[in-house]
Amino acid sequence: MTGRSASSPLPVRNALAELRDVGCRLVAGQVGLTPVLVTVGIPTFRRGEMLAQAVRSVLAQDFDRPFEIVVTDNDPHSTGAEALLEAVPELRDRAFRYYVNAANVGGCHNVNRGIELARAPWVTILHDDDLLEPGFLSASFAELDADPSIDGLVGIKGIIDERAAPPPAMARPSAAVRARKLLRRGLDGVLYRGGSSRRIGVRKLFWGPLMGNIVGFVFRKSSAEALGGFDPREEPASDLWFYIRFAQRFHLRQLRTRVATCRLAVNDSLKPATIRAMFTQQRALHQTLADGPVPDWWRHLSPYLIARSRVELQDYWGVDIPADEIGRTLGMRLPGNRPYLIWPAKFLLRGF
Image (tube, rainbow, N blue to C red; front, top):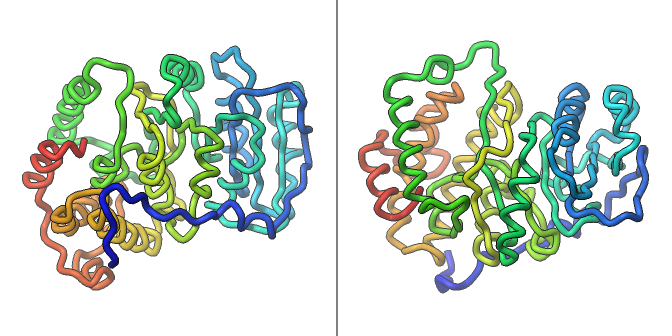
């Protein structure tokens, strides 16, 4: 791996440009002339009922400034716009557009499509199976108005586990899990230093998906364009890679407010093949960051972080991939779970 200086940003690939070869058509709504402050982009694919719930959570915002909803459908033969307008008829009176891609461009590029079509200077992405809290936009823009230097702001997310048989750690949290949650609440007071938000740098993101996926993330459209959007080659960790590039070039903050709820169900993200790809991306991310933005010796922490991720996937998501299998995939020996090593190191190196 070639060396880079600590100040050298990660390279950017213009994934947004790749959408030029695949068109889309507007099937409902219209391009308005009234300026809007923020675009809520909702990428969707054959989840009509969930999409309607997601849209309702946007319409329920206690926000008195203009915003628009842009749905991008990845099914070229979709009739989802008709079903959505029937389920949520009030959309007809709102700033709303529904586009259908000429071909299935993949999940990552469907997110990029929403960025491309946004009319507003600010953009936020809501997956069709997730929900926004009513105060998401008002809390976010109160912070953005207070500090105009902020380029991206992401809030805290909750989880709804809708699986028929969730793992015991999710269905009945152990005393240790409850204790960690209480510890985390106390730690938040230190991390945020009594404020409503905190700045997030690359070093924090070395330790994992600190802010989860991109739901509840408001960012400048110009910033996303400068980064080339989300790179499909980095799936299923494209959100984390995007956060890292964003933190390197722009002012990224985390809001100390719950702003969204993510559904956990049986889907592609929990398939073993997806999980293996996630570990591969996690390893690549550690190696890349240790080659520049973070101290070189941090690369030796990588096996322990991956081992910890494996245990968390087993405990909370119910996905059990043997350690030796992950080791063979990554070309390394995976150590045992060492939470007593990871937690102190993470605290001392400001990884929380």
